Length: 325
Ligand code: WQD
Image 1 (cartoon, helix red, strand yellow):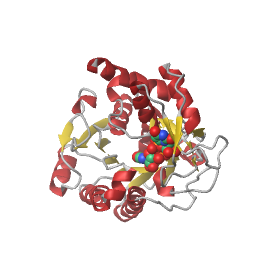
Image 2 (cartoon, protein in one colour):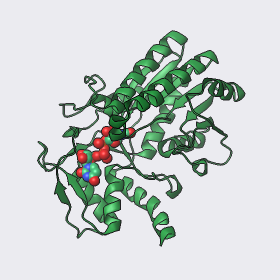
Image 3 (cartoon, rainbow, N blue to C red):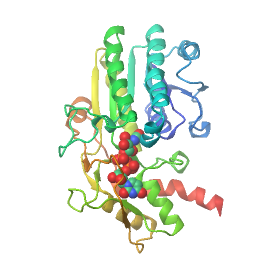
């Protein structure tokens, strides 16, 4: 097999490329470098620049490298931005996927892995979200991921591709300092920003129906996300007819208050009391994965705990801090 990883120079993509090459898979990257960086790629992995929206370019890359499997990670991923620019999100995430699937089907690709998101569930009212929990996304971002899953499943069935849609829960951490997430707007990097500025971390609402009143999420180390892709790629390689939809999480809820406590202990700034501010619109109280299906289907489970995630994310930040000093 030769795998094309789209978005392979991005934060999650580069971790997937590293894990797949470490596992002995042959990998080629397609990235438009809008947020990706070529330095994230391991030596010897070819980088083709271009967008998945460019059918002739995608077909050329697939043919030039005799690609047989695709791992589609490229996409736009900011919920708030998707509300402001839905047309842009549908074009990048849905039309981009349609073009890629068309080029893949036309060049004999037989395996297709798609990055989906827990955002497909919207505001689930269950303690653990299974893959059978109804999908009712509440943002254009989540809608594009759900539409993407439908497209992948339908195209796989019609064109003889084994497929898997992987629903990532809340990703954090870094395998090495070079692979850290730049400019992310998620909880852990935002708390880092506040700690570095010497200001109290913000808690968006402490009146949720949860044990400590703050929102509960399922945080997963990006290296675990990457190892799940290796397991899924192996499964699709062995099973030409697979059509999977899988949660990737740890199956354990961690509250915002607990997460801020862990960040403060890791950074050594435990004296600043978090400041509770208004709820952020559209935040579900609790989103935690059931991980039974991925364990059964792939024999996979997460290995890294939340402290390791935060410590690795902080280690990836310090070199940049030093370089600014
Ligand atoms: C986590 C919790 C905030 C910052 C989103 C997308 C999801 C996925 C990951 C895509 C929430 C709270 C945050 C802060 C806070 N996206 N918070 N203070 O919203 O669970 O998931 O990102 O690829 O699809 O929906 O993640 O990290 O933004 O927030 O209290 O300074 O932390 O309110 O409860 P979220 P998040």
